[in-house]
Image (cartoon, rainbow over all chains, first blue to last red; front, top):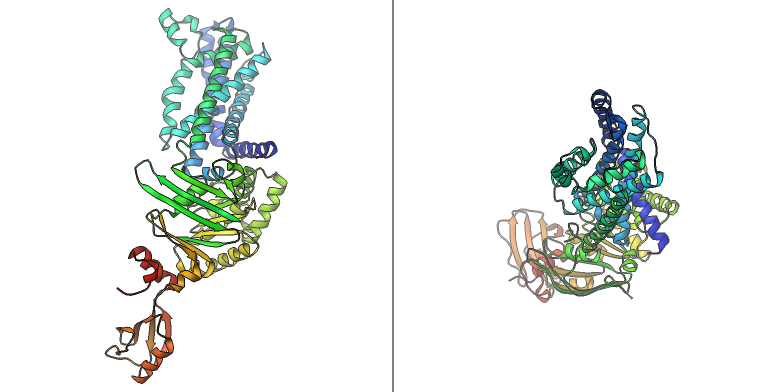
Length: 257
Length: 313
C-alpha cells in the first residue's frame, strides 16, 4: 500500500472507532461523567471540607487531576479491549485481515481510537470539575504530553488484553483486578508522602503513581515523584507495549489459526 | 496468466490435525472454478490461507503472480473473499460496512461511497443501506458480503458456499450475477454443496478430500468420465415386477416408478424400444441425481478413481 492508501486505511479505522463509541454514548461517555460527578460531590465537597488542604491545595483541587487521569486510563483501555475483542468475537476482524493493510496501520488505528475516547472522556470530566472547583494550568505542555502518552499506553494495554482474550470474562479480569486497584492506590485520592515509609516504597512500584503525579504537576505544579523521570518511564513503556502488540498482530496471536 | 497458483500447500493445526497435505492448484485468469469436497476436506482451510485468515505450515501461494509471502499487499488487493459465515459487525449500517471495507483498501471516501452505491444497487440492497446489518434476512446478508467483497474491484473473487441457505429464486439470481461478473473478466472460485450449482456455473473443477486434490480437470472432461447415469421413470400404468432389460440394471421403486441405470455404452433409444416391447409406457423421466453428484459420491464417499465414476460395484 502507498503511504496515502495507508493514511486512508488508518483514518477509516479511527472514524469507525469514533462512530462506535459515540453511537453507544450511554455506555461509553455518560457513565464516567456520572461517576466522576459523584466523586466530586462526595469526596470533593462533602468529605473534602473535613479533610482540609493536601499538597498546598484544597482537597477538591488536589483530587481532580487524579480523577481526570483515572477516566483517561479506564476509557482508553476499555475502548480498545471491548472493540477489538468484539471484532474477534463477531469475526469482523476478518474484514481487516483479508485487506492489504499492514499490521502497524491496524494497531495504530485502534490505539488512536482508544486515545480519542480516553481524552474525550478526560475533557468531559475536566469540564464537569469546573462546576465544583477552579482548575489552573501550571504547565500545558507536560499536561498534554502525559495525558497523550498515558492514553496511548493504556490503549495498547487494552489491545494486548483483547488479543489474548477468548471470552468476554477475559476482558473484564484485568480492569477489575489490576487496573482499578492500581488506580485507587496510585495517589489519586492522597499524597503518597502521607504513607508510612514501607507503604510509600511499595506504592512507588505502581506505575500509575507516576502518571497521576506527572499529570497533577502539569495542572497544579505539585508532584510526589520526579516528573521528568515519570515522562521517560511512560515513553519507554509505550514503545515496549507498541512493539509487543505489533509482534502479536503480525504473528496472528489469538486471531489467526 | 494464472490468477491463483498454489504449490505444495500444507497446513497442520496446533492440535496436530493435518488439514492440507501438500496441495497443488492452478486457476487461470477468467476461469469459473469449483472447489468441491466433503465437510472437513480442507476447502475452507485452503481459502483461509489464500485470504490470509489461516497461517500456512508450508508451501507457496501466488495471486496473479504476486507471492503472498513477499508481495502480500499487491496480492491481497487482487482478491475479494465472500466467507461462509457472516463476518460483519451486526450493529453497523449496511452502507457503512461496504464503505469501511473500501477504506481498508485505501480507497478514498468519495470513491468508496460511489462504489458502495453501485454494488448495493446491483445486489438489490440500496433500499436497506441505512438499516443495521443484523436486521437483514439471511439472503440479504449473503448479498451484503458479496457487495463488500467487490467494493475494491478485485480480479479474483472467492466465494465459500455463497448460496447456502438461500431460497431457489435468490440462488438463481445470484448465479446470474456471478455469471455476469465472470463474463466481465473476473476470475471466480466457488465452493458449494450444491453440485448442480457447480455443474451449471463452473468450467473447471477440483475435488479435495482429506487434504489432497483427488481430481483437477475441466467440468466437461470430468463429466465424460461418468460411466453410468441413473434415471427415474414414471409409468403410465402400475406394474408388479421390474422388466428384464438386457444391458440395463432396473429396479422397481414402487408400482409406477422404475429406477434404471444406463451405461454410457447404451443409448436411451435402446432403453425405450425395449420398454415399449414389454408394453411399459413411460410418462416422464428425470435424473436420479445430477451427473456431478454421481461422480462426486463415487470419488469422495466410495473412494474410487474417476474413471470408474458412476459404475456400479
